[in-house]
Length: 176
Image 1 (cartoon, rainbow, N blue to C red):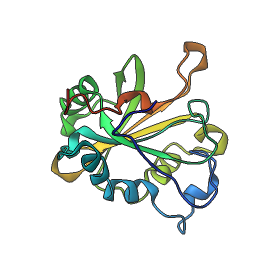
Image 2 (image 1 turned 180 degrees about the vertical axis):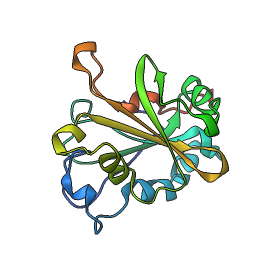
Image 3 (image 1 turned 135 degrees about the vertical axis):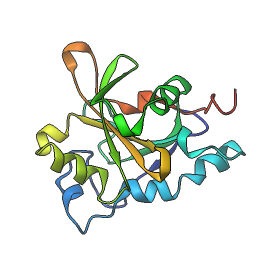
């Protein structure tokens, strides 16, 4: 997917993707936090300030990506996806939400520390093989918190585990 408002964060260290064991090591940089701290790049590309609740960071599963180098997509959320996510009550979140026909589990995190990679693998006790099936998208929640939405590859139902599908790389909700 291409678009004028898509930025990729790529580590200089060789990491294959969401399943890379190094992402669980304390010495590995927190790539989601770094990407969020640099989210203003998307606003610069669009020549206007994009509200944080419309910005997102995503990583695709091993099955939903085209590159074997870890990269985080920094972009806008699709308007209907943003509307559905931000209509949720953070004090009473459902365990799961359907977005574009695919199920996503929701976690409300106070910060991006620890790294969403570490949080996800630790919370669900995932090894590299199971992490390879995971896709993850992060967006702003109320009160400076974050929604972490995780999906999983389901090849039987043609779900490749690509949270990037929830993003609008042209930011049409901001700039129709």
